[in-house]
Length: 270
Image 1 (cartoon, one colour):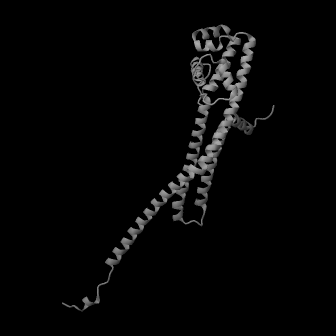
Image 2 (spheres, helix red, strand yellow):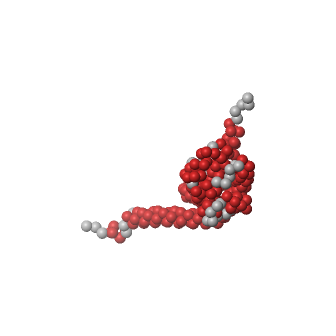
Image 3 (cartoon, helix red, strand yellow):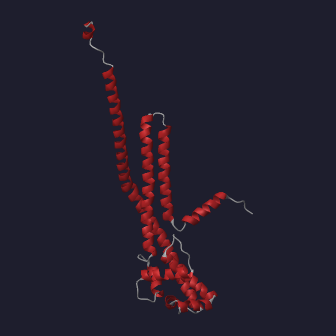
């Protein structure tokens, strides 16, 4: 028996987590890169003996604020754009050719594909054929739930009849699929469409993540960072000017009370 390797186990977990969503890995790695960059910059300023303490009091908080802005805006913008793209795909607003053909072949109702996907998703969730998961949406649930239905056809046909009788939408979709040949053919059809859709969604996630990172890194984040740094610098300069004014006033008051009396008064005698 081969010895347990924790490194391989960790790599396996990372692959399983990011394998179907490479765009997510790009966003997380990008945010981690911004964080490590900010941490290195702050550490360099603190440990640099050539930088005066007064300058460090200004530079360290500014670099920390820059790091928070960089990481926060990068992750928020990238994740927001990617999530929006994923939702459009899952709701059926954007369909591949194979997904469209699959849905049109099964869809018995004249309503739109997106409405049909939504309705089937709600049915499968209510029946417990699929579990609610934030990482997947209606179209993925439609494929998984449909393949679960075909599995029930093979193992529990009597139970399927009861399910179909109690749900007109499922009956109109799967009611004519009875023979073993039709079940196998439909299962292959759904599996191919589901694999194509998973690959398409993964690729679109990468494109969305890269595009969002370009937008965040080259436009939104630099502008926001410069505005924040400018505001912080003005506040520091204002505080320094107030301290300087107080110091000058104190010096003037000290000079006034320490002014010597003119020698003229020394000639007066009582």
